[in-house]
Image (cartoon, rainbow, N blue to C red; front, side, top):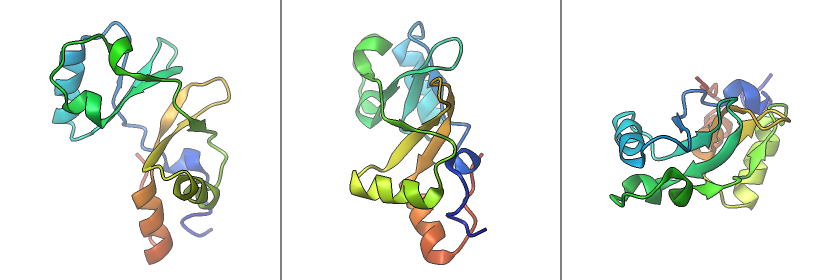
Length: 129
């Protein structure tokens, strides 16, 4: 199986930072920055995706609530979509990454377009975590 024939669920970064609506935005920013990420996924107690804190929210110093800072209901894909199909989707929609969730909305992880493109170009394995 080629590197981009694998399903998205196998290559998703499972270590993407998460937070809840009850977390303090200031604390979340510090944790996300320390982990060298630019995004944080807002989930509930069952890890169902509620929203996403993007680069702008993470870079800001504004002291608002998680709910006010997040983009609600981000687009997601299922774990079974092939990396090839996912790469085409990301290119078409001009996205740099997407979330992978189960059919009931539970977070599996995040897939980055640049990693898919590198794997396609260089025929190297895609590293999820």
